[in-house]
Image 1: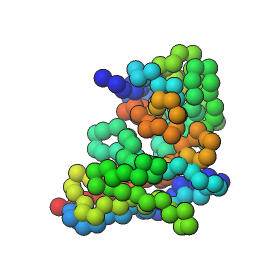
Image 2 (image 1 turned 45 degrees about the horizontal axis):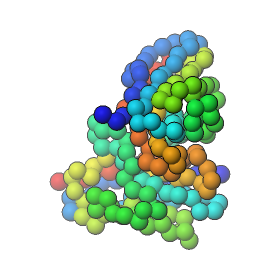
Image 3 (image 1 turned 90 degrees about the vertical axis):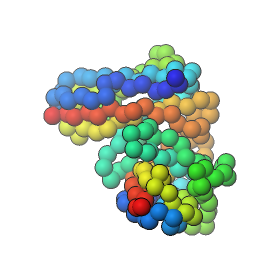
Amino acid sequence: AQRVTQPEKLLSVFKGAPVELKCNYSYSGSPELFWYVQYSRQRLQLLLRHISRESIKGFTADLNKGETSFHLKKPFAQEEDSAMYYCAALGQGAQKLVFGQGTRLTINP
Amino acid sequence: EAQVTQNPRYLITVTGKKLTVTCSQNMNHEYMSWYRQDPGLGLRQIYYSMNVEVTDKGDVPEGYKVSRKEKRNFPLILESPSPNQTSLYFCASSSTGGARQPQHFGDGTRLSIL
């Protein structure tokens, strides 16, 4: 079955420390992968997607097909990074976006 | 302002009383979808629509209906709501390319079915 797993419900790190939010997927073929973020009192929005290979707000995510992972990383966390993060996947030729359970990231001052 | 608007934002109702949650977007988007968000389960897709009169089931469609008579509107209908449909609901839309494009989400509708 198609599945996206975010093993950490909660993640807390100190400002300036590196942060990594884990995401694993279970899909046949080559899915497209995304990270969405919801800041406090804001709408859920796209952070980045693997096909763009870009860095947004200092975050990057590398697709590792061997480990079927798409972990989100940032070398130096900032307080404004505190938010709820969702990993999502889209199967080849599909239009059903599957989300993980979400990770609430808290950056401590 | 480009946005997705859901109404109502909050609703408390009783089992069996039909209700409709409206979703409207002003971005001329083709793709629209509905999700429910439950603790520990993340967002799960209920239905999606590629364009007018084209709808398809997501992962959890049971107990829900949708229609897409106009491009801008995508209402979610609960014909006979039950307590297990108590949840936070999100509508989203995106441009040509569907789910591959950035999804624009509404603010959410919190439903409580007693």
